[in-house]
Length: 563
Image (cartoon, helix red, strand yellow):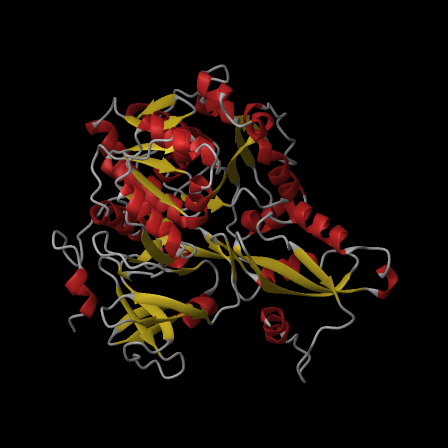
């Protein structure tokens, strides 16, 4: 059936593409062979050529082999954005292994799962995070612990005396310039980045291809512990190549890389697509509006993938008039809707049309994107290249008419293979329609008369805080470890900046009433879980509403919060 959105499809593009039947490593190797001297990464003024990145990745792959990493082994990668993350990511792939990207905001209690569930024996991280990883590993049973930890300092990738380093925000100095002692890893070894790269050995033969497991990013859900999403080289490859084609990327692209690469969007739509294209990535370790303004101006950034709150923040900077955004030709992102007024200002002042997209960890980031020439505001866009997306009745699986709400489902080469060690969860998330295997997103939406998709609600219980997905069941499971908490129910509260934020309704144990404050609980949460998950609001109550079967009626609390 010819879908109505094809009327708005870029005329220069096919509806689907044929992608290389090779591994993701081949993309770096090809770009390094074609453009050895070209800038691949820029970090605080230091330029890493494609040759540099390729050679360091080869050496690290050789080191991983010497540490016992073999085909199919999972290697944990826990870093904020920096050149070492890109080098380590490709080194793991070159070692025929699987990248397990981990959110660097996770704390030791959360990190245990990312070591034990994928059976990781090797982790690569930055020195500021190494202590928490070692703490997590040391607390696990002996047979589940890490055997090796490779640790880098941010300053291994730039000159701390450079003018760019001198201009970094004061709040970043201790973090990026500090030298942290290497932690002790019980029963294992800890190797510095310098020593890890100091090897004359060659890497193992490349044995992986399109059909092999490449990346195991974790996503949370309604049942507590996060689940690993099995992505083959082919699914990541598709969206990396498709992102280049969709965005009209060339080797002359200069992309600002500030969306985190541990997240599927930064990993695929920014890192992998740029490496495939032979483009340049200007790397930011975390968001700062004035650093972003200076980098866009200085490096003549042409493409910026972001979340809308970043754009809002940059436009609000008192220094904004000092920045030159004239080089930008593509700007877009997702995770939250772009406010109409901000999109209008971008268009009127800079001629930029903000291109919103939509996707999940399971779909290798974009399953939908707005056509760059015909975007609609506050809209998910149209099904991405090679993707068949529909809106169905969640109960009958019947396709819904135009304008009517239903569950968004997708089929295509970007869809993941299934959940790691979770056959039941995998079976529950796929359905067959017209002989095709569709992924159930759990998001409710509608299609307009032009074939564009709009998000309307969620089937899944989830909070979207500035583009970060927070799953209440996971937060509750962590909160129950506090000795004062008898029961907790996490719900969504509105927030003027984050859009949504995390609120916890808590029943204290009788022994702790009057001894613990709401602020005490908030402080404990910030110490024991990633800061974006930690409740910003805590409300004490004597009892939680429950159903006849004893289940907490979270919807009752959520509806009361919305009133």
